[in-house]
Length: 76
Image (cartoon, rainbow, N blue to C red; front, side):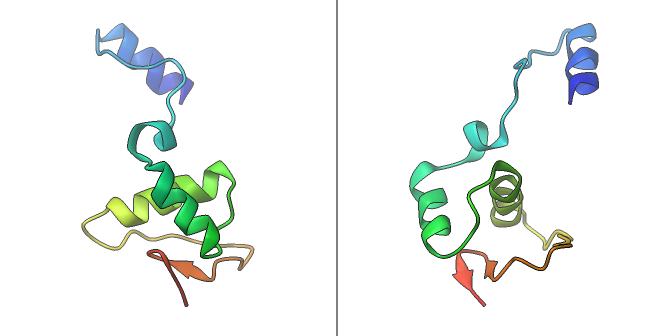
C-alpha cells in the first residue's frame, strides 16, 4: 500500500496517505448487518466482504481458516 501511495504521489495523483476500503466504500449499517449475520468484524474480513458485495462478477476469495459461513449478507 505504501508503494502504491508513493507512486500516486510521484505521478501527481491525489490519494489519501492512510487509505481504508471500509472508509471509502463501506456503509456502516450494511457492515453491522453483516456482523450480526455472522461475518467476523476484523478489517481484513470486512474489506473482503465489501469487494464481494461490490463486484460485478464473483471474485475468488480463499478462506484458509475455514471460518466463513457468510456470503453476500446471508448465512450458508
